[in-house]
Length: 287
Ligand code: ATR
Image (cartoon, rainbow, N blue to C red; front, side, top):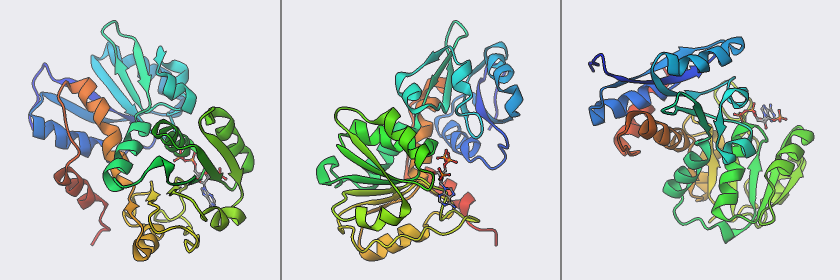
């Protein structure tokens, strides 16, 4: 891929950032669309996030994505914050406006919604309460997406109850009740549930396994894992064997990238099997 002196620029700020799949993902779309642009890793230390974000318009960048540990702190720097992002308390996409101000949004909500829609098209928000494992930033995006989809009841299961209480306080609405539970209650909560989503790091390569007996979960209920290394987690493998629709974590990653790409580079893109295959190749364990 060649770029000219007029290339549009974007990137991803994180610390560390070397593990990020986003440069590959946006690079795939840049190649596909032929846009004169570049998307680069931007290793930014936590203490430098404000200076780095303020440098975007100075350097002519159209914007950037944010990953760990900047998703919360960027909220304090951005000039305009999308209401959904402020409700969630995290941003992952910055667009530099024409006047040089920084517009912040959270596209993880969109990413989760599209991934669920694509991976479990039969799912209905009226199928029963959703059980969400975890209460971190990803859990907040997932729960906000479930609220937008019309889910009326969410049960959060988390190791640290006060964290889950805070999520419940921040995201419950008159149309969506949220209750908080310990892991001991998890398998009982599956009785009658319409959806199960893991947002914890349990089951990720190098982390402890996620031990949850799915026997009480109705077989029509989709099981979603936002972990994508490995692509098929133990939870998803068990769910697949029981006949549940399963949705892996890669879909959310691919879909959340789309709004940023379109805003920075001005071309419409899609999440296709070819894109998925290109990223899956990079997730395979080293031979
Ligand atoms: P993210 O922003 O990706 O959601 P996070 O904010 O670090 O990441 O949240 C990680 C989630 O995984 C939390 O719900 C965390 O539980 P706590 O709130 O109790 O920390 C959960 N988690 C991580 N390791 C865990 C473990 N060993 N057992 C149980 N839960 C775990």
